[in-house]
Length: 251
Image (cartoon, rainbow, N blue to C red):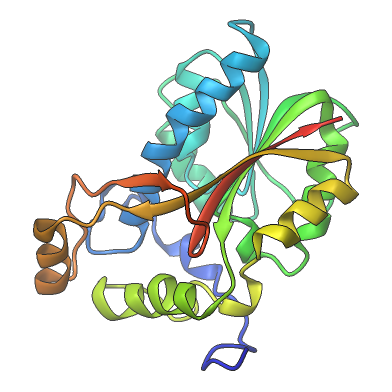
């Protein structure tokens, strides 16, 4: 599909410069990531509890960034490891871990430094569209999961609409959006992710569309100021046309 950024590399370096903006900025697309995580995390917790009950669960958060999900899960008593390529982001994550229990480490999502079958849950949220070989990331996630373990992911569909909304819309209307924060060629169609999971022994069990709740006040604030309202929210939908969140289980 021909678009202006079709052959460009994704810009992952800008995460190193965010520091406390990860948690404090609203004039930045990172505020959208916080809002996304706030909606997804309760759903993830519900699915973990349905599968494992109230026992201590070992969770690996791949591409954990500044720890939005990792720290939330640690507060609930889960045994969490967060892995990311950005040492600066991990430093922020550790500062915002109120439990002091999350094990944060610089790591390679293509070659995780852990043995087979050591985690009950692996999460890869807003990450698969930032790597050149998502199938290798999913294969590694499957390798380190216990049988019956859960793999959670969130990513974007590859089509003109998602390019217009996720890439251009954010660039046009949210201040401080870096160039090539996302590139369309790395977005993934749901059937592609389903096939990657199946090839690694993971059976897709849930797939939900994901979209912002766009009230008039929120739209006006973004258009007028270039900032994301503090109460900006997302919701699950029946359409995976733009973004989607899923869960797969290891056979």
